[in-house]
Image 1 (spheres, rainbow, N blue to C red):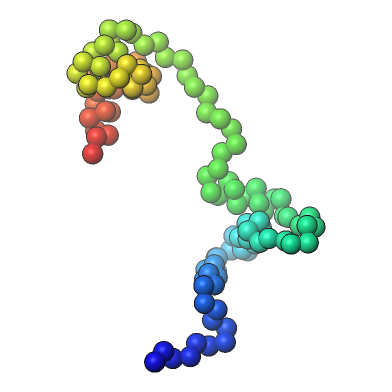
Image 2: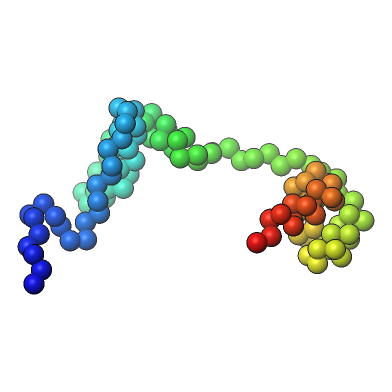
Length: 115
């Protein structure tokens, strides 16, 4: 037979978050946890925006889009990658753009990225 569980243990309940080291971390965790809870009354919740912003920065969330640099890609390099690596023209172009238009770097990146 199974042993009875303590009264504070609820089946299916998630474990509470582990305690954090600093007061700022606890404040950020509290701000994030308020977003997780649902309010059935429909009232607006008070959210500490500074703590929330800090927490989002800590997660690595970036609001800014990366600027794409313009790289001129030679048609001969695209054809070389298509022939040698057996990829589509679109994939060859992406590889070249990611490697500053250098065909040798693009081929090395493709080979090193393969499983």
